[in-house]
Length: 222
Image (tube, rainbow, N blue to C red; front, side, top):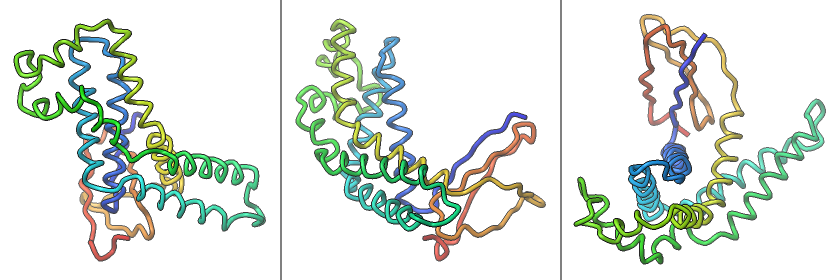
């Protein structure tokens, strides 16, 4: 049976994390510059990320959330019926990414200091603003050898590695915290509680031909 998975954040922070995850995936997918338009996706995603970095202290927020996860898992140490080997592995991963994150520069700082990125950012956001007459700097870069362009992309992505690793682990552990269980939306409506949850995940069979619209009571959100 083919299913479609939907995810819905239950707080604003998780909403931002999911958006950042999506942008990072777009960056990685388009960084090969396999055709003449991949650069549009790459730079649009990069500048969208930079805008998020300017709006919130993403590094400090993510570090605090990783520390909360670490404390939660530490509480399970030496508890009977808990796989201590797996628990130790998770705690080791949390320690590693937290240390890497704390040692990283502020997200987006190197992008702001990059003369090429600074030169193209403002006009790139205009409708159709990536034309050669608007951005001759970009037009020149696009005609550099592919090895040079991929090297530049790798350099920009490398500065995001601490973010990628930390966010991947936090979302992975968050997604694995719960479990799927069958539910029936009678007359198309299902009401449920999700105490202390950050995200709701829904698997819906494609042959139903439906998709969910999720809403929540603000007072009930964590």
